[in-house]
Image 1: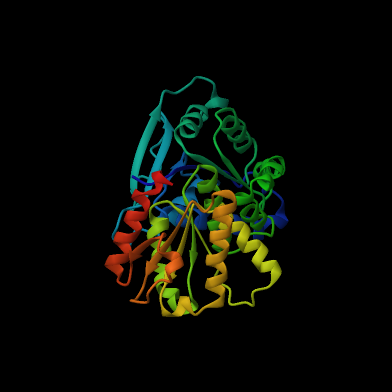
Image 2 (image 1 turned 60 degrees about the horizontal axis):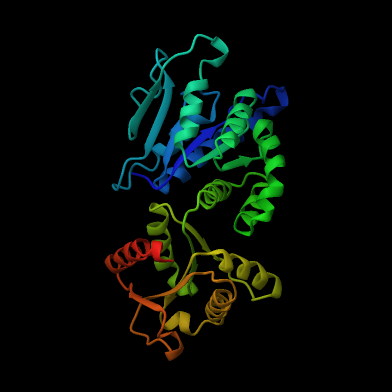
Length: 337
């Protein structure tokens, strides 16, 4: 099973003006990217319809693109009312699961049972665009105390919900920076990752900060992929910049919100001023606030650790097989931290 169950709701029904064609195309692309991002992290995607007027249709198309890695087919769980057509029939490269609800007589409530069922069984709700139906989902999710990620970039009910939730988002340091990313307009792939990051954080997913030298970028990619496949939230700073006070402040804030701080240890990282500053920040934050709850050294070569680090967890991770075992070990030990 995937690590999280995310119910997506939204539609194009609020985009009726003739000058909204470019926004409509952007909405479809964003929905596609959300589906791909969720599927890459092995989350189950909950939808209620196949209509091309909804986010559901493009989400599932995005999820299909992640079916070629040979690990696990993306899971799409379709919640539908009894007697309604079977959505996504014949779609390939997906593991489709159907949950059916007894039909109600009132025509205006034809999807209500499916929506309530999907919300009740999910870990988080993501809203994008939409009109009355999306607003109803927002209200139901709030009533059922489900975390809500509202995307403001395309207007509609989701944008109005974001305005209501943003004061709450900004009070949560681990969410505030990612929520602010959604306010800057939709950015290809980055915004989708931000939305899923928020969903994971609000749902209590274990979070990781990954520190590494530029020369170990490939190993960092592998570690991040292994963690995200298991539904973990990962932050890494990929910018090659001078260590300014402003960047230090932002990074230290993120480090202090992480459950686990990982440093990829080797000849390059032990000679990197940037990596040294990140390690020192992790130690300082851990002593001050208790987070990160653990600091881990993944050894990429035989470089010895300084004596001051002897008390921290050290795991061999020089090969792909070793990194896979190391990540499994870290995840198994999360409950202790």
